[in-house]
Length: 508
Image (cartoon, rainbow, N blue to C red; front, side, top):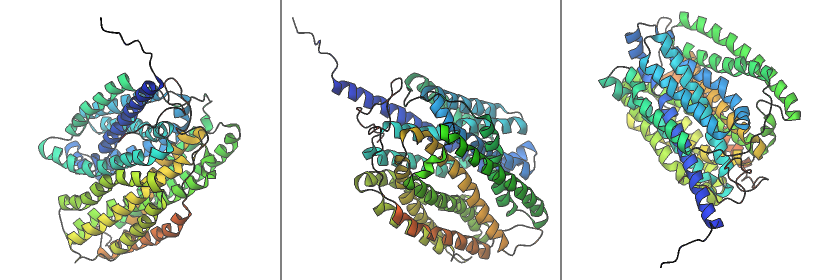
Protein backbone atom coordinates (compact mmCIF):
# COMPACT_ATOMS: atom_id res chain seq x y z
CA UNK A 1 0.00 0.00 0.00
CA UNK A 2 1.57 3.34 -1.01
CA UNK A 3 2.51 5.67 1.77
CA UNK A 4 0.30 8.71 2.39
CA UNK A 5 2.01 12.12 2.62
CA UNK A 6 1.02 13.48 6.00
CA UNK A 7 3.81 16.03 6.19
CA UNK A 8 2.44 19.29 7.62
CA UNK A 9 2.74 22.49 5.68
CA UNK A 10 6.27 23.88 5.92
CA UNK A 11 7.31 27.51 6.25
CA UNK A 12 8.57 27.31 2.65
CA UNK A 13 5.13 26.22 1.42
CA UNK A 14 3.46 28.96 3.43
CA UNK A 15 5.91 31.51 2.05
CA UNK A 16 5.25 30.39 -1.52
CA UNK A 17 1.49 30.63 -0.98
CA UNK A 18 1.85 34.11 0.53
CA UNK A 19 4.03 35.27 -2.38
CA UNK A 20 1.49 33.92 -4.89
CA UNK A 21 -1.31 35.70 -3.05
CA UNK A 22 0.60 38.97 -3.05
CA UNK A 23 1.29 38.69 -6.78
CA UNK A 24 -2.42 38.22 -7.39
CA UNK A 25 -3.36 41.27 -5.29
CA UNK A 26 -0.77 43.53 -6.93
CA UNK A 27 -1.53 42.23 -10.42
CA UNK A 28 -5.25 42.83 -9.91
CA UNK A 29 -4.63 46.41 -8.75
CA UNK A 30 -2.25 47.14 -11.66
CA UNK A 31 -4.85 45.81 -14.11
CA UNK A 32 -7.55 47.94 -12.50
CA UNK A 33 -5.37 51.07 -12.66
CA UNK A 34 -4.79 50.41 -16.37
CA UNK A 35 -8.55 50.24 -16.96
CA UNK A 36 -9.39 53.44 -15.03
CA UNK A 37 -6.56 55.46 -16.62
CA UNK A 38 -7.53 54.22 -20.09
CA UNK A 39 -11.11 55.27 -19.40
CA UNK A 40 -9.97 58.71 -18.18
CA UNK A 41 -8.31 59.45 -21.54
CA UNK A 42 -11.16 58.26 -23.78
CA UNK A 43 -13.35 61.33 -23.42
CA UNK A 44 -11.06 64.04 -24.84
CA UNK A 45 -11.34 62.84 -28.44
CA UNK A 46 -15.11 62.42 -28.06
CA UNK A 47 -15.83 66.06 -27.10
CA UNK A 48 -16.59 67.24 -30.68
CA UNK A 49 -18.86 64.21 -31.21
CA UNK A 50 -20.72 64.91 -27.96
CA UNK A 51 -21.20 68.58 -28.86
CA UNK A 52 -22.97 67.54 -32.06
CA UNK A 53 -24.81 64.52 -30.67
CA UNK A 54 -26.12 66.15 -27.48
CA UNK A 55 -26.57 69.64 -28.89
CA UNK A 56 -24.43 71.31 -26.22
CA UNK A 57 -21.80 74.05 -26.30
CA UNK A 58 -18.05 73.39 -26.23
CA UNK A 59 -17.78 74.98 -22.76
CA UNK A 60 -20.47 72.69 -21.41
CA UNK A 61 -18.92 69.62 -23.02
CA UNK A 62 -15.56 70.48 -21.46
CA UNK A 63 -17.14 69.93 -18.04
CA UNK A 64 -17.07 66.19 -18.74
CA UNK A 65 -13.30 66.43 -18.42
CA UNK A 66 -13.16 69.22 -15.81
CA UNK A 67 -15.63 67.47 -13.47
CA UNK A 68 -13.56 64.29 -13.69
CA UNK A 69 -10.39 66.18 -12.68
CA UNK A 70 -12.20 68.02 -9.88
CA UNK A 71 -13.53 64.77 -8.42
CA UNK A 72 -10.04 63.27 -8.40
CA UNK A 73 -8.62 66.39 -6.76
CA UNK A 74 -11.25 66.33 -4.00
CA UNK A 75 -11.27 62.58 -3.22
CA UNK A 76 -7.61 61.59 -3.55
CA UNK A 77 -6.48 63.63 -0.48
CA UNK A 78 -9.07 61.77 1.62
CA UNK A 79 -7.80 58.32 0.58
CA UNK A 80 -4.91 58.52 3.06
CA UNK A 81 -7.49 58.37 5.87
CA UNK A 82 -9.74 55.84 4.11
CA UNK A 83 -6.95 53.34 3.44
CA UNK A 84 -6.01 53.34 7.12
CA UNK A 85 -9.58 53.16 8.36
CA UNK A 86 -11.06 50.48 6.06
CA UNK A 87 -9.77 47.14 4.80
CA UNK A 88 -8.09 46.68 1.44
CA UNK A 89 -10.79 44.37 0.15
CA UNK A 90 -13.67 46.65 1.11
CA UNK A 91 -11.98 49.70 -0.42
CA UNK A 92 -11.24 47.83 -3.65
CA UNK A 93 -14.83 46.64 -3.95
CA UNK A 94 -16.16 50.15 -3.27
CA UNK A 95 -13.80 51.67 -5.84
CA UNK A 96 -14.56 49.19 -8.63
CA UNK A 97 -18.30 49.21 -7.80
CA UNK A 98 -18.33 53.00 -8.22
CA UNK A 99 -16.37 52.76 -11.46
CA UNK A 100 -18.66 50.03 -12.81
CA UNK A 101 -21.81 51.91 -11.78
CA UNK A 102 -20.53 55.06 -13.49
CA UNK A 103 -19.74 53.07 -16.62
CA UNK A 104 -23.26 51.58 -16.71
CA UNK A 105 -24.78 55.02 -16.21
CA UNK A 106 -22.63 56.44 -19.00
CA UNK A 107 -23.62 53.66 -21.39
CA UNK A 108 -27.32 54.33 -20.76
CA UNK A 109 -27.20 58.12 -20.27
CA UNK A 110 -30.10 59.83 -22.07
CA UNK A 111 -28.45 63.25 -22.07
CA UNK A 112 -25.68 65.53 -20.85
CA UNK A 113 -26.74 65.72 -17.19
CA UNK A 114 -26.73 61.94 -16.72
CA UNK A 115 -23.44 61.68 -18.61
CA UNK A 116 -21.85 64.26 -16.32
CA UNK A 117 -23.00 62.33 -13.23
CA UNK A 118 -21.61 59.14 -14.79
CA UNK A 119 -18.19 60.72 -15.19
CA UNK A 120 -18.21 61.94 -11.58
CA UNK A 121 -19.13 58.47 -10.29
CA UNK A 122 -16.40 56.91 -12.44
CA UNK A 123 -13.88 59.42 -11.12
CA UNK A 124 -14.83 58.59 -7.52
CA UNK A 125 -13.73 55.00 -8.08
CA UNK A 126 -10.62 56.05 -9.99
CA UNK A 127 -9.55 58.36 -7.15
CA UNK A 128 -9.46 55.44 -4.69
CA UNK A 129 -7.73 52.85 -6.89
CA UNK A 130 -4.59 54.82 -7.77
CA UNK A 131 -3.30 55.61 -4.23
CA UNK A 132 -4.48 52.19 -3.09
CA UNK A 133 -2.10 50.54 -5.56
CA UNK A 134 0.97 52.37 -4.25
CA UNK A 135 -0.03 51.83 -0.61
CA UNK A 136 -0.45 48.09 -1.19
CA UNK A 137 2.81 47.72 -3.12
CA UNK A 138 4.83 49.42 -0.39
CA UNK A 139 3.11 47.27 2.24
CA UNK A 140 3.84 43.96 0.48
CA UNK A 141 7.01 44.35 -1.56
CA UNK A 142 10.46 44.25 -0.01
CA UNK A 143 12.57 47.40 -0.61
CA UNK A 144 15.09 45.57 -2.77
CA UNK A 145 12.34 44.66 -5.29
CA UNK A 146 10.13 47.73 -5.22
CA UNK A 147 11.80 49.36 -8.21
CA UNK A 148 10.75 46.67 -10.66
CA UNK A 149 7.17 46.62 -9.37
CA UNK A 150 6.90 50.42 -9.58
CA UNK A 151 8.41 50.06 -13.06
CA UNK A 152 5.49 47.85 -14.03
CA UNK A 153 3.09 50.44 -12.62
CA UNK A 154 4.87 53.15 -14.62
CA UNK A 155 4.33 51.09 -17.77
CA UNK A 156 0.59 51.18 -17.15
CA UNK A 157 0.62 54.90 -16.36
CA UNK A 158 2.56 55.66 -19.57
CA UNK A 159 0.87 53.28 -22.02
CA UNK A 160 -2.79 53.68 -21.02
CA UNK A 161 -2.96 57.44 -21.84
CA UNK A 162 -1.20 56.77 -25.15
CA UNK A 163 -3.70 54.09 -26.16
CA UNK A 164 -6.79 55.94 -24.91
CA UNK A 165 -7.18 58.62 -27.61
CA UNK A 166 -6.42 56.15 -30.42
CA UNK A 167 -8.91 53.63 -29.05
CA UNK A 168 -11.51 56.35 -28.62
CA UNK A 169 -11.05 57.51 -32.21
CA UNK A 170 -11.35 53.93 -33.46
CA UNK A 171 -14.57 53.30 -31.53
CA UNK A 172 -16.13 56.58 -32.64
CA UNK A 173 -15.34 55.83 -36.28
CA UNK A 174 -17.68 52.81 -36.12
CA UNK A 175 -20.18 53.54 -33.33
CA UNK A 176 -21.68 56.34 -31.24
CA UNK A 177 -20.18 57.72 -28.01
CA UNK A 178 -22.06 55.29 -25.72
CA UNK A 179 -19.75 52.55 -26.95
CA UNK A 180 -16.89 54.25 -25.13
CA UNK A 181 -18.61 53.10 -21.94
CA UNK A 182 -19.95 49.82 -23.31
CA UNK A 183 -16.42 48.79 -24.30
CA UNK A 184 -15.15 49.44 -20.76
CA UNK A 185 -18.07 47.70 -19.03
CA UNK A 186 -17.05 44.00 -19.43
CA UNK A 187 -13.53 44.82 -18.23
CA UNK A 188 -14.84 46.74 -15.22
CA UNK A 189 -17.26 43.95 -14.30
CA UNK A 190 -14.52 41.32 -14.67
CA UNK A 191 -12.18 43.29 -12.38
CA UNK A 192 -14.97 43.68 -9.81
CA UNK A 193 -15.86 39.95 -9.85
CA UNK A 194 -12.25 38.76 -9.71
CA UNK A 195 -11.56 41.20 -6.91
CA UNK A 196 -14.55 39.95 -4.93
CA UNK A 197 -13.10 36.44 -5.16
CA UNK A 198 -9.34 37.00 -4.93
CA UNK A 199 -8.69 40.30 -3.15
CA UNK A 200 -7.43 39.99 0.44
CA UNK A 201 -6.71 42.52 3.15
CA UNK A 202 -3.18 43.84 3.60
CA UNK A 203 -1.69 46.30 6.03
CA UNK A 204 -2.75 47.34 9.50
CA UNK A 205 -5.96 49.20 10.25
CA UNK A 206 -5.63 52.31 12.39
CA UNK A 207 -9.09 53.31 13.58
CA UNK A 208 -9.33 57.08 13.67
CA UNK A 209 -11.96 59.80 13.57
CA UNK A 210 -12.67 61.67 10.37
CA UNK A 211 -12.07 65.39 10.82
CA UNK A 212 -15.04 66.98 9.05
CA UNK A 213 -13.45 70.45 9.01
CA UNK A 214 -10.44 69.07 7.11
CA UNK A 215 -12.75 67.55 4.51
CA UNK A 216 -14.68 70.80 4.17
CA UNK A 217 -11.44 72.73 3.66
CA UNK A 218 -9.95 70.20 1.23
CA UNK A 219 -12.90 70.43 -1.18
CA UNK A 220 -12.53 74.13 -2.07
CA UNK A 221 -8.77 73.91 -1.47
CA UNK A 222 -7.76 71.21 -3.94
CA UNK A 223 -10.90 71.59 -6.04
CA UNK A 224 -10.50 75.35 -6.38
CA UNK A 225 -6.82 75.00 -7.22
CA UNK A 226 -7.40 72.44 -9.99
CA UNK A 227 -10.47 74.23 -11.35
CA UNK A 228 -8.71 77.61 -11.38
CA UNK A 229 -5.67 76.20 -13.17
CA UNK A 230 -7.87 74.32 -15.65
CA UNK A 231 -9.80 77.52 -16.40
CA UNK A 232 -6.55 79.47 -16.97
CA UNK A 233 -5.57 76.83 -19.50
CA UNK A 234 -9.00 76.98 -21.13
CA UNK A 235 -8.78 80.79 -21.35
CA UNK A 236 -5.60 80.42 -23.36
CA UNK A 237 -7.57 78.59 -26.07
CA UNK A 238 -10.43 81.09 -26.28
CA UNK A 239 -10.97 84.34 -28.23
CA UNK A 240 -9.99 87.45 -26.28
CA UNK A 241 -13.51 88.56 -25.22
CA UNK A 242 -14.47 85.14 -23.91
CA UNK A 243 -11.02 84.57 -22.41
CA UNK A 244 -11.35 87.68 -20.20
CA UNK A 245 -14.44 86.28 -18.47
CA UNK A 246 -12.84 82.83 -18.08
CA UNK A 247 -9.67 84.36 -16.65
CA UNK A 248 -11.70 86.25 -14.03
CA UNK A 249 -13.46 83.05 -13.01
CA UNK A 250 -10.13 81.25 -12.87
CA UNK A 251 -8.59 83.96 -10.68
CA UNK A 252 -11.48 83.83 -8.19
CA UNK A 253 -11.37 80.01 -8.05
CA UNK A 254 -7.60 80.03 -7.60
CA UNK A 255 -7.78 82.60 -4.80
CA UNK A 256 -10.45 80.57 -2.97
CA UNK A 257 -8.36 77.44 -3.51
CA UNK A 258 -5.16 78.95 -2.13
CA UNK A 259 -6.86 80.41 0.97
CA UNK A 260 -8.70 77.15 1.68
CA UNK A 261 -5.52 75.15 1.10
CA UNK A 262 -3.59 77.33 3.54
CA UNK A 263 -6.26 76.73 6.18
CA UNK A 264 -6.24 73.00 5.32
CA UNK A 265 -2.46 72.83 5.85
CA UNK A 266 -2.77 74.68 9.18
CA UNK A 267 -5.46 72.24 10.30
CA UNK A 268 -3.31 69.22 9.39
CA UNK A 269 -0.32 70.59 11.28
CA UNK A 270 -2.49 70.87 14.37
CA UNK A 271 -4.12 67.42 14.00
CA UNK A 272 -0.96 65.49 13.21
CA UNK A 273 0.31 66.18 16.72
CA UNK A 274 -2.24 63.60 17.86
CA UNK A 275 -2.09 61.41 14.70
CA UNK A 276 -5.51 62.71 13.63
CA UNK A 277 -4.64 64.45 10.36
CA UNK A 278 -6.70 63.73 7.27
CA UNK A 279 -3.53 64.09 5.17
CA UNK A 280 -0.44 63.77 7.34
CA UNK A 281 2.14 66.34 6.22
CA UNK A 282 4.93 64.80 8.29
CA UNK A 283 5.70 62.95 5.06
CA UNK A 284 7.52 66.09 3.92
CA UNK A 285 9.80 65.89 6.95
CA UNK A 286 11.40 62.91 5.18
CA UNK A 287 14.08 64.61 3.07
CA UNK A 288 14.09 62.08 0.23
CA UNK A 289 10.29 62.12 -0.08
CA UNK A 290 10.24 65.92 -0.22
CA UNK A 291 13.01 66.08 -2.84
CA UNK A 292 11.40 63.36 -4.95
CA UNK A 293 7.97 65.01 -4.87
CA UNK A 294 9.45 68.39 -5.85
CA UNK A 295 11.15 66.91 -8.93
CA UNK A 296 8.11 64.77 -9.83
CA UNK A 297 5.96 67.92 -9.67
CA UNK A 298 8.13 69.69 -12.25
CA UNK A 299 8.30 66.58 -14.42
CA UNK A 300 4.51 66.15 -14.28
CA UNK A 301 4.02 69.77 -15.35
CA UNK A 302 6.30 69.15 -18.33
CA UNK A 303 4.51 65.91 -19.22
CA UNK A 304 0.97 67.31 -19.22
CA UNK A 305 2.03 70.61 -20.80
CA UNK A 306 3.80 68.86 -23.67
CA UNK A 307 0.98 66.36 -24.20
CA UNK A 308 -1.53 69.19 -24.69
CA UNK A 309 0.71 71.64 -26.58
CA UNK A 310 2.49 69.39 -29.09
CA UNK A 311 -0.76 68.19 -30.76
CA UNK A 312 -2.04 71.78 -30.92
CA UNK A 313 1.24 72.91 -32.50
CA UNK A 314 1.21 70.07 -35.04
CA UNK A 315 -2.40 70.79 -36.03
CA UNK A 316 -2.55 74.61 -35.87
CA UNK A 317 0.97 75.51 -37.02
CA UNK A 318 2.21 72.57 -39.10
CA UNK A 319 -1.27 71.89 -40.50
CA UNK A 320 -1.32 68.13 -39.90
CA UNK A 321 -4.40 66.13 -38.98
CA UNK A 322 -5.52 65.18 -35.46
CA UNK A 323 -4.56 61.56 -36.20
CA UNK A 324 -1.01 62.57 -37.12
CA UNK A 325 -0.67 64.71 -33.99
CA UNK A 326 -1.69 61.74 -31.87
CA UNK A 327 0.73 59.41 -33.64
CA UNK A 328 3.61 61.80 -32.94
CA UNK A 329 2.99 61.45 -29.19
CA UNK A 330 2.54 57.67 -29.32
CA UNK A 331 6.18 56.46 -29.85
CA UNK A 332 7.46 58.39 -26.84
CA UNK A 333 4.70 57.10 -24.57
CA UNK A 334 5.20 53.50 -25.70
CA UNK A 335 8.97 53.76 -25.23
CA UNK A 336 8.42 55.15 -21.75
CA UNK A 337 6.18 52.19 -20.93
CA UNK A 338 8.55 49.61 -22.40
CA UNK A 339 11.60 50.95 -20.55
CA UNK A 340 9.91 51.39 -17.17
CA UNK A 341 10.39 47.75 -15.98
CA UNK A 342 14.09 47.82 -16.92
CA UNK A 343 14.50 51.16 -15.16
CA UNK A 344 12.85 49.66 -12.07
CA UNK A 345 15.26 46.71 -12.06
CA UNK A 346 18.17 49.09 -12.55
CA UNK A 347 17.04 51.10 -9.53
CA UNK A 348 16.87 47.92 -7.44
CA UNK A 349 20.41 47.01 -8.50
CA UNK A 350 22.31 50.30 -8.25
CA UNK A 351 20.00 52.96 -6.80
CA UNK A 352 18.63 56.19 -8.28
CA UNK A 353 21.64 58.34 -9.23
CA UNK A 354 22.61 56.66 -12.51
CA UNK A 355 18.98 57.11 -13.66
CA UNK A 356 17.81 60.49 -12.39
CA UNK A 357 20.89 62.47 -13.50
CA UNK A 358 20.59 61.58 -17.21
CA UNK A 359 16.80 61.77 -16.81
CA UNK A 360 16.87 65.40 -15.66
CA UNK A 361 19.35 66.33 -18.42
CA UNK A 362 17.15 64.69 -21.06
CA UNK A 363 14.04 66.39 -19.67
CA UNK A 364 15.56 69.87 -19.77
CA UNK A 365 17.40 69.27 -23.04
CA UNK A 366 14.28 68.05 -24.82
CA UNK A 367 12.28 71.09 -23.69
CA UNK A 368 15.07 73.39 -24.87
CA UNK A 369 14.89 71.56 -28.19
CA UNK A 370 11.13 72.12 -28.36
CA UNK A 371 11.77 75.82 -27.72
CA UNK A 372 13.39 75.88 -31.20
CA UNK A 373 10.33 74.54 -33.06
CA UNK A 374 9.21 76.54 -36.10
CA UNK A 375 6.53 76.14 -38.73
CA UNK A 376 9.18 74.48 -40.92
CA UNK A 377 10.20 71.84 -38.33
CA UNK A 378 9.69 68.38 -39.88
CA UNK A 379 7.24 66.03 -38.15
CA UNK A 380 9.88 63.32 -37.68
CA UNK A 381 12.07 65.73 -35.70
CA UNK A 382 9.14 66.70 -33.46
CA UNK A 383 8.55 62.99 -32.79
CA UNK A 384 12.25 62.41 -32.02
CA UNK A 385 12.43 65.30 -29.55
CA UNK A 386 9.26 64.04 -27.86
CA UNK A 387 10.87 60.59 -27.55
CA UNK A 388 13.77 62.28 -25.73
CA UNK A 389 11.30 63.98 -23.38
CA UNK A 390 9.53 60.67 -22.71
CA UNK A 391 12.82 58.91 -22.01
CA UNK A 392 13.81 61.62 -19.56
CA UNK A 393 10.47 61.30 -17.77
CA UNK A 394 10.81 57.51 -17.62
CA UNK A 395 14.26 57.83 -16.02
CA UNK A 396 12.82 60.18 -13.40
CA UNK A 397 9.38 58.89 -12.42
CA UNK A 398 10.09 55.25 -11.44
CA UNK A 399 13.23 55.82 -9.31
CA UNK A 400 11.91 59.00 -7.69
CA UNK A 401 8.52 57.54 -6.72
CA UNK A 402 10.16 54.34 -5.45
CA UNK A 403 12.83 56.19 -3.52
CA UNK A 404 10.52 58.82 -2.08
CA UNK A 405 7.78 56.48 -0.90
CA UNK A 406 10.34 54.00 0.47
CA UNK A 407 11.60 56.74 2.80
CA UNK A 408 8.28 56.87 4.66
CA UNK A 409 7.46 54.95 7.80
CA UNK A 410 4.61 52.40 7.56
CA UNK A 411 2.25 54.77 9.39
CA UNK A 412 2.72 57.42 6.68
CA UNK A 413 2.54 55.05 3.72
CA UNK A 414 -1.07 55.68 2.72
CA UNK A 415 -0.69 59.44 3.26
CA UNK A 416 2.35 59.46 0.97
CA UNK A 417 0.43 57.63 -1.75
CA UNK A 418 -2.44 60.11 -1.45
CA UNK A 419 -0.02 63.04 -1.69
CA UNK A 420 1.58 61.58 -4.84
CA UNK A 421 -1.85 61.26 -6.48
CA UNK A 422 -2.89 64.75 -5.42
CA UNK A 423 0.36 66.36 -6.57
CA UNK A 424 0.09 64.74 -9.99
CA UNK A 425 -3.43 66.11 -10.47
CA UNK A 426 -2.47 69.63 -9.39
CA UNK A 427 0.82 69.57 -11.32
CA UNK A 428 -0.96 68.30 -14.43
CA UNK A 429 -3.49 71.13 -14.30
CA UNK A 430 -0.69 73.64 -13.59
CA UNK A 431 1.40 72.37 -16.50
CA UNK A 432 -1.48 72.67 -18.95
CA UNK A 433 -2.40 76.14 -17.66
CA UNK A 434 1.21 77.36 -17.79
CA UNK A 435 2.02 76.09 -21.28
CA UNK A 436 -1.27 77.18 -22.86
CA UNK A 437 -1.34 80.57 -21.14
CA UNK A 438 2.23 81.43 -22.15
CA UNK A 439 1.59 80.20 -25.71
CA UNK A 440 -1.48 82.43 -25.91
CA UNK A 441 0.25 85.46 -24.36
CA UNK A 442 3.18 85.34 -26.78
CA UNK A 443 1.25 83.97 -29.74
CA UNK A 444 0.05 87.26 -31.19
CA UNK A 445 -3.42 85.83 -31.94
CA UNK A 446 -6.25 88.15 -32.86
CA UNK A 447 -9.19 89.11 -30.71
CA UNK A 448 -11.66 87.06 -32.70
CA UNK A 449 -9.93 83.68 -32.92
CA UNK A 450 -7.69 82.02 -30.40
CA UNK A 451 -4.84 80.18 -32.11
CA UNK A 452 -1.54 78.51 -31.33
CA UNK A 453 1.40 80.08 -33.14
CA UNK A 454 5.02 79.05 -33.52
CA UNK A 455 6.11 82.07 -31.47
CA UNK A 456 3.75 81.17 -28.64
CA UNK A 457 4.85 77.54 -28.63
CA UNK A 458 8.52 78.52 -28.47
CA UNK A 459 7.81 80.86 -25.55
CA UNK A 460 5.87 78.18 -23.66
CA UNK A 461 8.56 75.55 -24.10
CA UNK A 462 11.24 78.08 -23.15
CA UNK A 463 9.50 78.73 -19.84
CA UNK A 464 9.09 74.97 -19.33
CA UNK A 465 12.76 74.41 -20.15
CA UNK A 466 13.89 77.05 -17.65
CA UNK A 467 11.85 75.40 -14.88
CA UNK A 468 13.02 71.90 -15.85
CA UNK A 469 16.68 73.01 -15.77
CA UNK A 470 16.38 73.45 -12.00
CA UNK A 471 15.83 69.68 -11.69
CA UNK A 472 19.43 69.03 -12.80
CA UNK A 473 21.09 70.30 -9.59
CA UNK A 474 18.14 68.98 -7.54
CA UNK A 475 18.68 65.34 -8.53
CA UNK A 476 22.19 65.38 -7.03
CA UNK A 477 20.51 65.58 -3.60
CA UNK A 478 18.69 62.28 -4.21
CA UNK A 479 20.10 59.46 -2.07
CA UNK A 480 18.95 55.87 -1.93
CA UNK A 481 16.71 55.46 1.10
CA UNK A 482 17.53 52.84 3.74
CA UNK A 483 15.05 50.14 4.72
CA UNK A 484 12.44 51.78 7.01
CA UNK A 485 11.67 50.45 10.46
CA UNK A 486 9.06 47.74 10.51
CA UNK A 487 10.63 45.07 8.33
CA UNK A 488 11.23 44.55 4.65
CA UNK A 489 7.62 44.69 3.66
CA UNK A 490 6.98 47.96 5.35
CA UNK A 491 4.63 46.79 8.14
CA UNK A 492 2.90 43.82 9.61
CA UNK A 493 -0.22 42.11 8.50
CA UNK A 494 -3.89 42.48 9.07
CA UNK A 495 -6.24 39.67 8.17
CA UNK A 496 -4.01 37.89 5.76
CA UNK A 497 -1.51 40.65 5.29
CA UNK A 498 2.17 40.22 4.65
CA UNK A 499 4.42 40.08 7.69
CA UNK A 500 8.09 40.94 7.97
CA UNK A 501 8.93 37.26 7.57
CA UNK A 502 7.10 36.99 4.26
CA UNK A 503 9.14 36.75 1.05
CA UNK A 504 9.19 39.65 -1.36
CA UNK A 505 6.10 39.92 -3.49
CA UNK A 506 6.61 40.33 -7.22
CA UNK A 507 4.53 41.53 -10.07
CA UNK A 508 6.98 40.87 -12.86
